View 1 (tube, protein in one colour):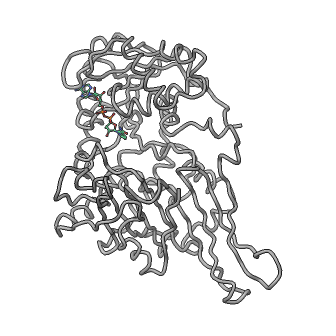
View 2 (cartoon, rainbow, N blue to C red; view 1 turned 60 degrees about the horizontal axis):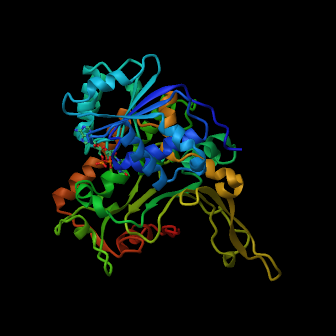
View 3 (cartoon, rainbow, N blue to C red; view 1 turned 45 degrees about the vertical axis):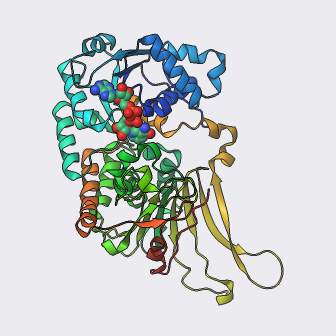
Length: 484
Ligand code: NAD
C-alpha cells in the first residue's frame, strides 16, 4: 500500500564528509534502503569525499560495514548490497586546499542531476561552496544539501546565507531539518489540509493550547564539548521545534509547493511575540549513580548551558491570538518521546453535570516512537449506573493501519535525499526562515547571558525541572506525560 515507488532520474551524489558519523549512521544506510526499494536507477552514482586516505574498494568496505551496523533492510542477504556497492566510489578531498578536486571533477558525469551533500563541520560550508565553483563542479542545475547547525545566531546565519548565495541560487540550496522528513510531520499536513473535520476548529476559538515535546533519554555523551557551545535552545528549539510549530500554526498554503509552504511558515515565525523570560525554564541534568551529570559530560564544571528548555510563547495573529504554545525539549528525560498535542477547549456547557468531570479532546501527533495520530474523544463509560464519561483514543497508528507495509516507510533522511534528487524543496528550510528563527531566539539567549542565568538541576529519568511543571500549573494546565 505504501510501497509505490517512483524511481528518480539518474544522478551523481557527492557526500562531503562521506566517512563521518552522520554519513555512516544515516545517509549511506538510507541510500541503500532506497536502492533496495527500487527507487534508485541503475546508473546512479554516489561518491564519498572526505579527508581520510581511502580508495574505492576501501570506501565500499566502510559503507558495507555501516549498512550492516545501522540497518540495511531485508534485501541485505541476496546480493543487493554488492550491487549497491558497485555504485559507490571515493575521492580524498581537502575542503580547505587543492587536493582531490580535479579528480572529483573527472568523476562527475555531465548532463545528470548533480547533488553535493555538505556533511561536514559548518565551518567548512563556505570553503566547499567556493571550491565547487573554482573547480567547475557547480552547474546552474546542481544542488547542495546543507546540514545543521545553520549558524550559531542571526549574524552567523546571515553570513552563511550570504556566502552560499555568492555561489548558488536559493533554489539550489537544500537546508536540512530532518524533522520535516518524518512521516508523521507530513501526515500532520495531510490531516489538517486533506480533511474537512479539523481545519474549522484549528484556531484560538476552539483550541485551548498546544504542546510540543521532544524528549530524549540520552545525555550529551561524546559530543559534550560541541553541545556545550550550543545548548537545547540552539540545538533543538531554533530549528526542529520551531519547524513543528510552524506546520501546526501556519495558514493553509495555496499549494503543496516549496514557496507556498515556506511563505506560510515564515509568516508564523514573524508573528511570534518575543518570549517573556519569566515564561522560560532552563535545566541541566544531574549525575545519576554511575552516570555523569551534564557538567561532567560537557567537561565544563561551571557550564551554564541548558540540556533542557521549556517555554510558553504566543503567535500574534487572528488565528492564534490568546492560544498559548508550550514547547519543551531535553535530554536524559523519562522516555524518548516526541509529540505535538492540540488540546481543545471544554464544551461550552456540560449537560451531564459536574460529576461527569471535565473532558477535553486532544489530538496527539506522535513523531517517535510509534509514529501515529490519536484523537481523544469522550464517550459514556459502559454499564449501568448513570452517565459517567471517559476519554478513549481514536487511534491512527501507522503500524496498525498499514500492517507490514509500515516497515517500508522511508525514514526522514531517505525521503529528504530523494527530494533533493527530484528537485523538491518543500521540506527544506529557506534562508529567510532560518534567519527569522534566529531573530526570535537570539534575544532570549542574550538575556540569559546578561542576567547570568543558571539552569535548574533535574534528575535523570524525570520530566525536567519542577519549574517547568509550574510554567503550566500557573496557567491551570499540565504537561502531557512523557511516555515511551
Ligand atoms: P564527523 O566529525 O563524524 O565527520 C566529519 C567528516 O568531515 C569526516 O568525513 C571528515 O573526513 C570530513 N572532513 C573534515 N575536515 C575535512 C576537510 N578539511 N576536507 C574534507 N573533508 C573533511 O561529523 P558528523 O557527525 O558526521 O557531522 C557532519 C555534519 O552533520 C555536521 O555539520 C554536523 O553538525 C551535522 N549533523 C550531524 C549529526 C550526527 O548525528 N552525527 C546530526 C545532525 C547534524
